[in-house]
Every structure is written in C-alpha cells, then in structure tokens.
Length: 184
Image (cartoon, rainbow, N blue to C red; front, side):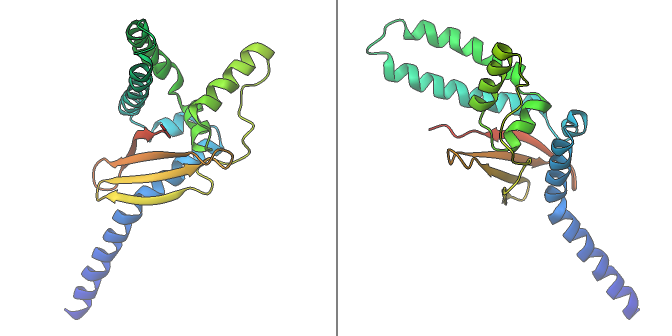
C-alpha cells in the first residue's frame, strides 16, 4: 500500500513537471524547425489567423496614431489612413509566413524582413537576413499566466524586443497566437 502511494505521488509529480515544461518543449520544436528552415514543421505550432490578426491590430493602431499626429498638418491623412488600413491587411497576410516568422525568431524586425525582401527584388540576391543569430537565440522565457507563455527575442543592434506569445491548447499543447512587435 505504501508503494502505491509513492507511485501515485511520482506520477502526479511527472504530470505536473510535464505540464510546466510543455511550452519550453513547443519553443524548442519551433526553434529546431526554424534552424532547419522547415516551414511545415513550424506551421504546426502556429495559429496563423490569430497571429495575423494581432499583427494587423498593432500596425493599424500605429498607423492611426501616426495619422492623428499629422492630421492637423495634412487634411488628406484620413484618406491615407483608410487606404493604409487596407494595405496593412494585405501586407500582413503576405508576410506572415513560416519563412518570415523564422526571420523574426532570429530577432529581425518586420522592417528588416521587408528591407531584405526589397533588396532581393532589386538586386536579385537572396533576401535572407544577414542576422547570424539562430531562432530564439538568447531569448528570455516567462509564463504570463497559466495558459499564456512568452518567448522574447532582443535585436542586438537596435535593442528592440519581439515577444512570441504562446497560448495553451489542451493539456500540454501550445500554439503561437500573437507576436508583440516593438511599437514605439
């Protein structure tokens, strides 16, 4: 009877440890997929509609703030904001792909990713970032709540931080649901 008690306690301890370790395991799987440039494996851990929506909201808020700041000086700003919002939706849909997320996991901001893409379009060179970091290299990790976990990557050049927010899906499954950009 005493042995059964210890066995149950050990099983519970293993379940609790696995429950707590599971987001780290997901981040490791994402990191490995990024290092191997395996977009399909990376996509298994991402809720693309949620990530795209979070990015659209952040960029639209930033765009609205910029337009409001300039609206006194520029009456055409409202029209620009309306057109900009439609453009943001299209750009986010086009750029939120496994390949672009791998670049962000290395600490590249979306401006770096877009600039690299423009460089490749203009020069015909590969648009891959010159950032030699591996995905999630030197990242910091923290639980924000029981069902929310953040992996934060800092760009060494600019000091900007990009946070990758994972949300629990089931007992020990996690999905990337939001990317918090450095919007100043």
